[in-house]
Image (cartoon, rainbow, N blue to C red; front, side, top):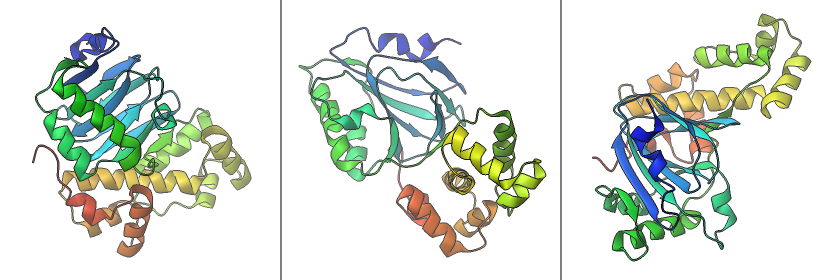
Length: 266
């Protein structure tokens, strides 16, 4: 498999165009690559993990990821049926700082309706083309309508001790894991484990645990096979209000709102 299959080599051939590519994944990996243009990535029909040098991002339905130019990344959908919608934008001198930071943001109805126009587009959109103007409008709106950069990412552990700990957490999200119990299980003092968390991935155990639970909850809600109360239990919350409040804090919407949201394809 090569990146050519995903037209990545075409993205930068014309440095003045907005490049558009929508496609069914058909594979479970787009290998690490970079491009000179910035990327607007939206997915449907599943979930994609986007790995950069520092983080693993979790891109659920009805959210988009902005990837600045020059950031190496790979894309890992959870299903071959995932549809990717990509717009690649050339860098402009007066671009606001918003476009310099990678991040994930919810897609509101305005952006969703603009994306509807892009369904049949493919290849380079030239500045004198009507479709270019629509795509440019979408980009210009992003800083105004995107709101807060959501914490839908988990730093990648490098310390061998922490790799084992974080792997255990991710594989046991429904358990009542305590920090002291975790430290004892892996033969570490609570002070040492806290220091490793902060030094290696820049967040505390509770931050990592909470975000891991919410990312799993998003995945379960996306599948639409479980009631919200069952999803809460599956990620370790016995209290539905507590689960709902935590979900809202991370994703800026309630689990019920997310579960009932619409996609372009619907």
